[in-house]
Image (cartoon, rainbow, N blue to C red; front, side, top):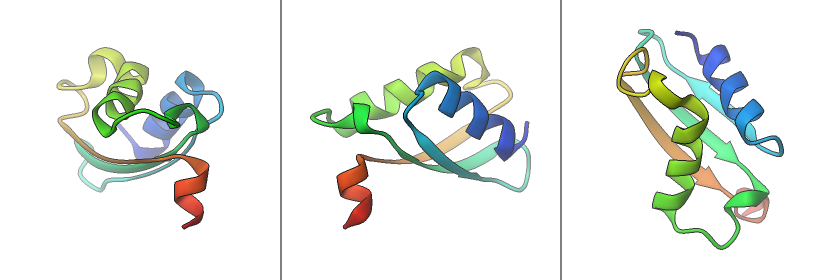
Length: 77
């Protein structure tokens, strides 16, 4: 698994999202995801939205994914 593949999956699953993903070992990753659809949602709901874009890869090919989820307004601050 590569950071680029994860970025593409997130952005395909959340069409208005912009994701930046890092990870050097192929199983542990960090992502910052900016998406207008996060507006009004608590952090857990936002994380679930991102996890849904990755499906069965979570806990398998992706052992761990640290997330920072922001609305576009929050990202500008």
